[in-house]
Image (cartoon, rainbow, N blue to C red; front, side):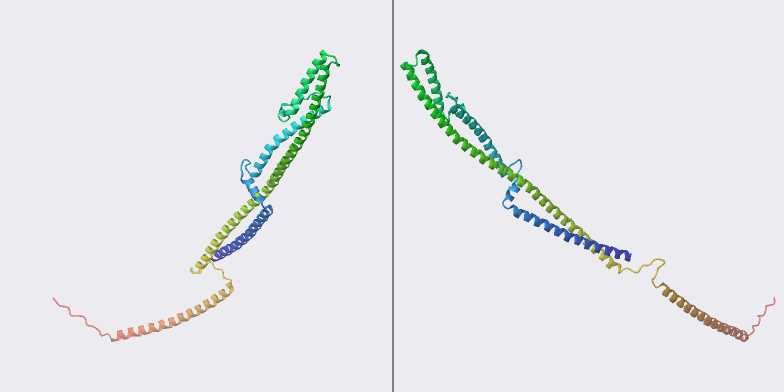
Length: 316
């Protein structure tokens, strides 16, 4: 039992040392994980707020996603307006290069180009009147010549308004193009930033998860070390109490000095045997002397005892 208790104590001591090493190693790994997370946060800088907002926001409610949504809502109609103005600009250029037919101003641009729309309507009406006059009079007729002069003035006014409309449309197209380019750049910036932060968030979340696992490992290692320390203390107490118990041995004890014990036992046995023989011899002499004395005493008693007469019998 003592050997078993010693082995238990040694095993508990070894287990405590091993768990202590595991605690130290896990703490070093935890320190490395904390340092890696701190370095990542330092490199991220001001983007940490955006990163955490991406991780905590639900349904795209982060500031970056809000900005991207706002830019997209502005970009789509701006692109549509630019496309419409480019189409109208091409129509104006065709009208300017054509035979001078009055242009039909789209209803979308009537409000923006009232003078052009009025000039186009006047040109159409004047040409219609010219056709009526030409059908009734010869070219040399004063009314025909007057209407011809009026038509030239209306056509010249129309072409002037057409040139002004083309220049105004060029300016609007340039402004709309700049707006679309700016909004496109903003959208690309938001998309790129979100993509970068999405990649960084994966790394950031991985570092946080690793840190959480390292802390859990440290807690588990400390718990095992505490259990090992308790087991070591219990084993030490058992060894301490076992020294007070009486000695125990098996029915057939085995000693490392078996030969010495055999020799000593043999010598002691011989001595005891000789002693017993001597005592027996002395005892026999003593008994013989006592027997002689008893016989002599009996003889003396017999000689000294007087004879006793028998009593007289009464004669009847």
